[in-house]
Image 1 (cartoon, helix red, strand yellow):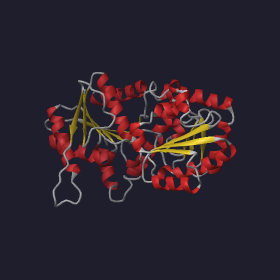
Image 2: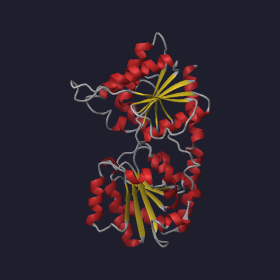
Image 3: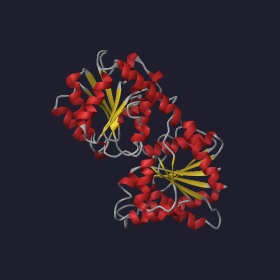
Image 4: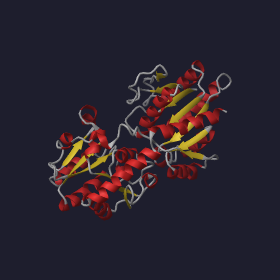
Length: 379
């Protein structure tokens, strides 16, 4: 198959999944054409089957904001004809599905490709619900040949919000379980972050308000009163300043390790850091899937998380970790202490988390679902 993939090239989960899926499909012998305004940051593996097509962004004084959508639609049409695309796979509906629909109308008499729109979360829960875009989203998603979502929760929400007149297929996110593995444990690396008697709690996110990172800090403050521990926060985003302010206000400079983007890109081995931690803590208000949670589970980490969105589909409550209501600091802390103070429970949850990740969310298993869907759609 000749497959076009459109995604944001940044570090968000939708771009990561799109890129890893494209790379896996290329390994299976398909020709993959990435189309974006910049090279996806995970597209670092050379392959004769992978091609990157950069979309130029116009810069004309008349426009306050460059009309990227027009350029993207034209580029898609060009790539579809020249490379005889069979499938165009959209990751994150806004504004890519609209551009794909326009491109398809432009060239349908020459190259009639199929459009698959994969919903990742905020394209439904936040951006798509804006009153100025909701009707357009409903229209363009219904024009897609197939719509998928990364969790049943997101599929149901999208169906209700946008009145989609077709079945939304759930295909979960995935990771390379050989990259995120307990075997990455390195005692010398662990000693860089905590003393031997201290537990390590870790949080990874893009630090937007919807992630409620201050809840992480409030939970840790209470945990620290009961148990010697360190908190590691990895991420970058609009809540960064509030986090730094909280750390200063409560004199946590020696207890909280805050690693933002410049450290992540240069010095931090996230798979290894997950492997040496003792607990992953997530406090999101909304979470369509939770890719960072899956990475933690694959690394053998028990997870304490809020009970929202697709997280209950990923975390088996009481088996791989525990779920609490959004904003319920009391239970988040109680569950965390229960795990951190009970080695037998921690080991059992750790083993179950790794098994669940490798059984249901490994790359080979999920990529095969996408490949089967592509082939069925073409038939």
